[in-house]
Image 1 (cartoon, rainbow, N blue to C red):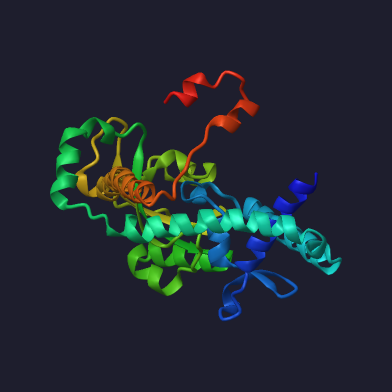
Image 2: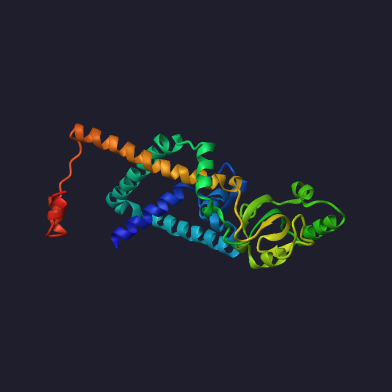
Length: 293
């Protein structure tokens, strides 16, 4: 129970240490005492592939969870609980420090230095085209979001008068981190909320919705820029970033293995690396296979 409490307190401290954002008051979503939750920190709590699926109710739930955690953490601190657990807390912080610094070094000395060339991307694409066949309908759309119904009606009237959504967006679009305005590029139609997907069904290329589509975030207007059927092939520009990241991961694994081997060899030469399997008998009586390797 005590160990779980220490881990819980460690997590609370790490969360609170990331909450300072007093320079950007307009980006603060919630505050508990001197700790704040910024819009950027809120975005980090939602996986990128789930952003468009996240409802306002779910976002409010994430905010409430942060508030509840801060309330408990600050109460624990006021009671002096951190002082009674100092030794265990320092041990857990040391574990975090080891992992954190090791990861940062790998990122600095290996990952950031990895480059992927256009030639490598093209080669991978041509050899793995089957990976880029769409398994569902995908659409590319231009998006404009406003929060009020009154403004939504104004935009609808302007669209009927011949204005384009592209020229209205810079004037009327209201920023929302979960529903960006402008060209959304290709995305699976299935990720759209039901009310939006229904409104876009049957909408032709270069056709714009006649009125705002209401959701938890406000009123949406869409112009279909392209629609690709299930089974169609994505072109190389659509998947360039995806291929780049995949090749980076592969190169990273190879570079990390080489980097680690050099560190290990150096440690062995300096006799600063020692492995002793004998104590493993405490866990397993038959350690012959381990000790002979």
